[in-house]
Length: 346
Image 1 (cartoon, rainbow, N blue to C red):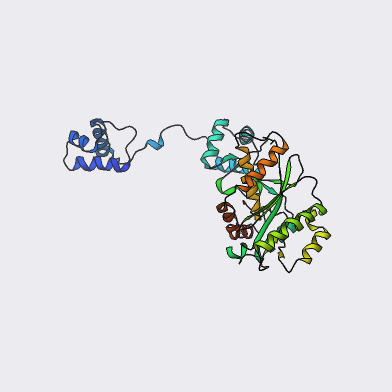
Image 2 (image 1 turned 30 degrees about the vertical axis):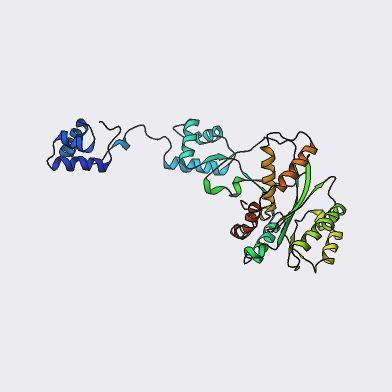
């Protein structure tokens, strides 16, 4: 019948109220479900000291890291997001009269809302890149989902047979995921594996082309002529479609520009800002393919098996999935505007 822990202020008030109403200790205990000893003690404390609240919070060992110490620790984290608990503890203890342990540091960081997470990887953006991204977002901020349905999205991607498990972790709060100090910049780089080119729009998934050799302007011209042209004229027969491509060198070659100029009466080439994978929804389709391959019961062991697995996974992507990505475009544009052209979490 006893109750573990201290009573709340409300429960103490109920005990005092019942006793003052004339109920005996036993009847009060039966009514409220507390022990007779507790009823007697609470009423005695009120009668002698007019005590009506618990002082349990005043008990126990004093916290080693007070509010001022938390501010100091917060500055240490913001100065070096990649610092380990050991490094934070060592730096915190420098010049302090009372030192703390790593366990205390870890517990304090958790109380402050910090947790160890992997940083988002974003393209390295120059001031010029930011300006062009912002201009693109401003020019398309009034586009509706119906407008974005007229865009065909394309990109190349490389899938590796094996992946590196090396990971960097940082300290950040929940709302700091896109803080500049919480990001790891990346640049385009080569590697082994299988390279593919794909295209899709809100209406349908398009062709998916394995790239056997290095993708140069000549090879890309073949893709554009053999796959982009029939896709655009079929999906957008009214010539109201937009074709999106990024600013890879082979995309900007003169023979490619000339080809698009010759077909500008059939569809429009969307002027794309540099370093903007966060604006291209096809990047998420690559993630879908990557995840599906990683969870396969029998994983590819050579490049041909990897190529077959990629092709098979692409054809199984649901309509709901790629349509939802296109419908996210207004939110992506707003995110770039909010970041003033900087990287976003998409």
